[in-house]
Amino acid sequence: MSEPRPSDRHDASQPDDTFEEIVGEETQRDPDLAVIEAGSRTLRTYAGSPQGEAVPARPTDPETDQALRAVEQELAGRWGETKLEPSVTRIAALMDVLGEPQRAYPSIHITGTNGKTSTARMIEALLNAFELRTGRYTSPHVQSITERISLDGSPIEPERFIETYEDIKPYVEMVDAQQPYRLSFFEVLTGMAYAAFADAPVDVAVVEVGMGGTWDATNVIDSTVAVVTPISLDHTDRLGTTPAEIAGEKAGVIKQGATVILAQQPVDAAQVMLKKAVEVDATVAREGMEFGVTSREVAVGGQLLTLRGLGGAYEDIFLPLYGAHQAHNAAVALSAVEAFFGIGAEQARSLDIDAIRKAFAAVISPGRLEVVRSSPTVVLDAAHNPAGARAAADGISEAFSFSRLIGVVGTSGDKDVRGLLEAFEPIFAEVVVTQNSTDRAMDADELAAIAVEVFGDDRVQVEPRLDDALEAAITLAEEDDEYAGAGVLVTGSVITVGEARLLLGRG
Image (cartoon, rainbow, N blue to C red):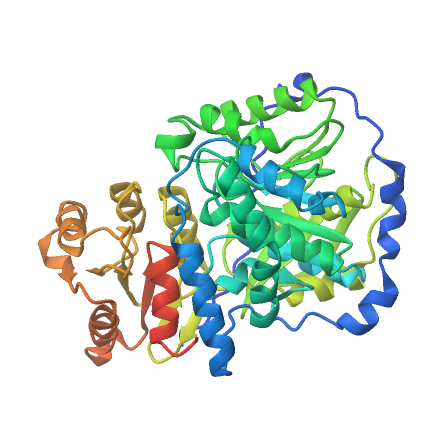
């Protein structure tokens, strides 16, 4: 494996100073949140520490596996995640008949274009470090549908997933019968997550939007903290064609009197977010202003950070993830947790540094510059849009000293494929184009035609089957001694990465 090389580069850019004029006066948050830091100690005694099983395998018990497959099949029969009717009417109706489970706990709501899942995992780890029971809802999953709903840092057990589905199924069918359209796949899963969190019960839910914000199914919660990760162009057919238009949709997660943790944004997107915050009397903390990354140094297995949070500096933070974007995600996550505890607005103090260090050191984010094999080194990254691809390209170039990098790319047909390929072109010596097994996958030959325009015919190889593509890329990386330090990056889609993970024996 090629070892990461040291570097002291960090991003010190700051938002426009005119943002100061946009932000209104800070407001007092719910004083009851100040006591949440104590957590539910008695519940934690039986819950134990997070196990960190990020991507569970199929159930070993045949009956459980069969029952889980039956649930998956029923869910798959509903509208998929790419077919939407922009409304929260159906999910609100489901919450009503379930007794409003989403109001049984406070929540942190995360929107943005890239970095949502990694940020959610970091927030979860930090809250666990302060002995809070957590529920985390993220999407899409890498390999197992149960990854989407986590309790205390571990995916919900298959048996509990099945039980939760069966518990809410009669209510789902009741709502289906009353609405013009049946609840979608994502809406049912959201209902399951909120019900599972209430049943646990959890002290706080960490919830990632599926798409957008205003009409996303998750947006029936009244979150005290809204997190906005970097916004870029994605899902432009549904959310808008400019960062400002997309920000307008995503700003829907900002609730009255909440605290907004705003990652570095395009100026027009930031202005939209700040305007919405003023309208609902929300407090805003901005990366590069109220918090940020003070310094970072690439280290073996990750990076060493100094973060400036709302309550002060946090030094010597080891984060076992690669890339400047993950350092910025860490700063956002830390500030979100501080805001949840009232630090910055209500209290002038820092969180316990040892707990912070322990939490960050344990963070994992499958499929995000994840090394899954050595000799040659194979890295997986779920980048699926140009901004994500640029972050992945920068991260792998910084952290690994590959003499030659082979790309394996399989994308969905509704993405900016050319933009993604152009972001990777400078770092890929050759690219093997392929496709994953879903209907959303872009045909390998169609993808190859675009790749040839970007890379040239002599740098593109076509292997429609993903297993063949992996074998071809590994062969290219191993082809002679000159390239003994070569590596492989599998990217283009979360689905492609998940299937590659299984093929490479990580399932």
